[in-house]
Length: 442
Image (cartoon, rainbow, N blue to C red):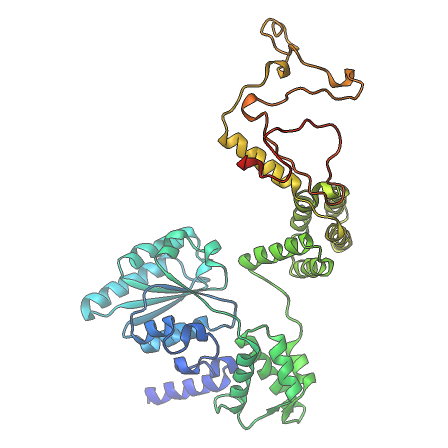
């Protein structure tokens, strides 16, 4: 009776489960997408089918199949399967899993797989608690994470694991998944149909997230049936999708910032504004954006238009003084100005070349005529002797050496010729440096 009761409970739970749960693949062949990992002969599939999977980290956006793959491993392997979530588990839970694994190995010769979902939620101490068990082979770890593991996982844990990256589902894969949901008896077979424009809208708006696509289809189907219709319309799809808040993890945080800076450096005004809007919509710190613009103003615009630094600095001050949302306009002002400005990295390359000489060349002494001569006894030491005061010269400039002899002939700044970044003012020629040469290689 208890078995019949348990079966009845499972059947009812399955019937009440969300569409994404009801359609969870039961074999590797049912997985939609990730063919670079799971197609016949591909590395992850080969390891799973041969039951030779060592510790792995599955990294990918939500809804790409990380948990599904872990569950399929549980079905394919002869090892015991122990699931934990790093959201709620801790070192004590890991220790208990390890104790069970050791007993299981000693009594039955059976290995253990620990599936740790959201592994990036474990702090360094908690991650370190896994290492001894993974290192000795007591536990085979399958970690699932939406965050870049190079940012969120410790180097020792990463070095003991193979990394497999899962990609968002493309449009063809999402369309195939939704069509399966409409035809599968576990899904919506015989209940509703899906208009072509509604299908296209769901595919286009779910950003490669299989779970979101199926959940949206489930809601759209409920809306259509509630209205007495057996076909899901575009309006149903739009209502089901609503508008998801834009969010991104640590890795995409850096990727979006990189795209933002590179767009402005590339003088693409619209791209710069797009990435700015995307960051602000995602709740990015406006002060961080402002700091990056101030840096870019000298790094990439530089002397070609020195006013760019003033504009960027003003935008940064506006963020502090005015605050969001109004300061969005000040940031946009700076983005448009800096993207349209002529570009020069001569300041950046000049400073890099000077640093290279400081680090690689002998540290010469300050020439005697440049040394401080304002204290008692300096004249006896010869400090300041021979120094020529430029303001005494009619041209306001005199030809004298301002560097140690070891780097006296090195040239660091090469004007780009873009905008205002041109050679001007008196300057002695550098005998061993030609315009355009790399000063570090002279």
